[in-house]
Amino acid sequence: MLSDQRHLFAVPSDVAYFNSAYFGPRLRSVTDAGRAAIDLTGAPWTVQASVFFDPVEQLRSTVGALFGDDSEGIALVSSVSYGIAVAAANLTIGKGRTVVILAEQFPSNVYAWRAKIEREGGDIVTVPRSTNGWTEAILDAIDSNTAVVSIPHCHWTDGTLVDLERVGVAARGVGAALVVDASQSFAAVPLDVKSVQPDFVVSVGYKWQLGYYGLGYLWVAEQHRGGVPLEEGWATRKNADDFTALVDYVDQYEPGARRFDVGERSNFVGVAMSNAATRQIAEWGVANVAETLGSTTSDIVRRVAELGWFAVPDDQRSGHLIGIRHPNGLPDGFADRLASAGVSLSVRGDSVRIAPYLHTTDDDIERLIQVLR
Ligand SMILES: Cc1ncc(COP(=O)(O)O)c(C=O)c1O
Image (cartoon, rainbow, N blue to C red; front, side, top):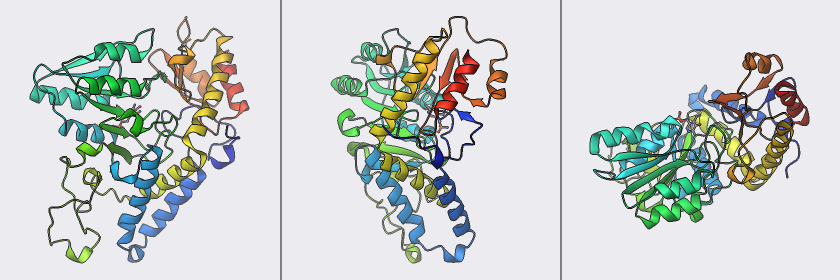
């Protein structure tokens, strides 16, 4: 369990921020790194060629380790929709075959599949919510027609968890690819690509990952690293760091998943901020972050239960993110009451989404309980 880390975050004491699933709270070290990078790029005469590459490789390496792997599988992308587009461009569906997704899944992991099916044939199978949780329902939906299972690690509206290892086994059993949008869990819930063996995993970098908006991470399994990128940038080519030879065009890419990097991924400010963020998370350790947040959410679930609110059963939810519902629904003026008490959270459908982080204090929880009461 990690101790209170509030001092590291730029969250004022009169704000009870339970909205990490929207935007992660800002680490002071991340702001400092961003400001230093703005200053650096404001003096371009000091920017060496190495600044285009070294920080990017540092980020690849830290992020790879957070996935339980090395840097070779990591591409830096602009968004989840970009990462899913890479996966869709490198997988085959075709007539009579299906893509399995979850009900009310985040749209960036839906539209690319709909568009591909429109062009090339196939169908979407949408797994409905079930009182037994997602995993059994997904396993039921996978059959010999399944070409791709493209799902989150936990549902973005309420944190309900998917057992990715079991889904991975079932997908491989029918020759289907597994694609994961881990935006609402990566860096807050352990995800080991060696155990899950997915084909592609993508995540934003600005929620539980605490980094820059506009810089996400795509992990690509070894068998897809020779695939087709969405764009043909110069920085992903062999010897790109020799700026004097850029017009000696080369067909080879840099090794690993680097070919899938989005153009201008050297994004100096973004990479600096995301490096600071992921370094701090690596220092804490994802398992320790998960355990600490799990204790915070358990405390909240117990206290709101006394007021008639309920969450999904403990064995179906992830530790960091919860959605709570009330049998009577939400009262009028709920958003105003939250705002006037300085409590920030999101409502998604009928679920009040509570997403604490390591800055969360007992006082924040007390304020939340007061509003819910
Ligand atoms: C589960 C999930 N995936 C993806 C995103 C963001 O997608 P994109 O990077 O395509 O904007 C969000 C944002 O809330 C999300 O909750």
